[in-house]
Image 1 (tube, rainbow, N blue to C red):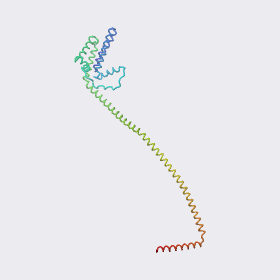
Image 2 (image 1 turned 180 degrees about the vertical axis):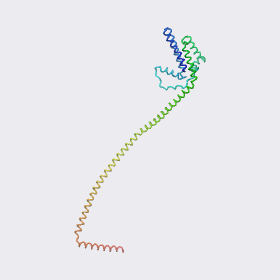
Image 3 (image 1 turned 90 degrees about the vertical axis):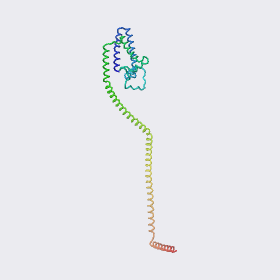
Image 4 (image 1 turned 45 degrees about the horizontal axis):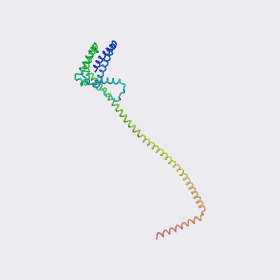
Length: 291
């Protein structure tokens, strides 16, 4: 494809210089020739772009460059990937699509006749003049063709190796990014699940706090109840102690007074009467036992 670009530039450069020279010399004829040559060049570029559209990266670049000149809004649809290898060509630079395009109308020899007629027309009308630049372009083209044939496979293999390494690195970075993004998605889903359960967690914490407050309140209430009961029990015990001490004091006082009021004679009589009662009780008990 580089040979085609060089040949196209070698053809266009003399035509542009001739057009400028003719425009400076003869205004009327030069304008017609310039217009005619520019229209032919535009048609040639359009035909070449249509032919190279699906054949090689150069054709895709020409189509992309032509699209960039349009002022209409472009579609946001994904652009198809560029082909890794160029399409079929004949004679090294002529795309196969050009022959397929002309085959239904001109047959097999049509493209060759078109190219030969175009060259003869350019030479006969002196639109393109053969000079030292032509030989220089031919020499450069021959050197380029020889270099491509000689060193092309090795350079292509080296470039493919570099491309494969770049693709492998890019794939590794992509896989790492995909794994990290997948992990981030999983973490985000887990966080969303946690956020969904946050309401229940807060409700549970509120219930726990309410239960703690209720427990504390009941513990304090029980403590107050116990303290009040202790104080009341103390008062009851104090009153009971006072009453018991008063009763004991009263009993002791009465007993002391009774004892002090009994004479020795009354004491003897009382003892004797007790002995008599005990004997009578013993006889009654023995009689019941015998019966």
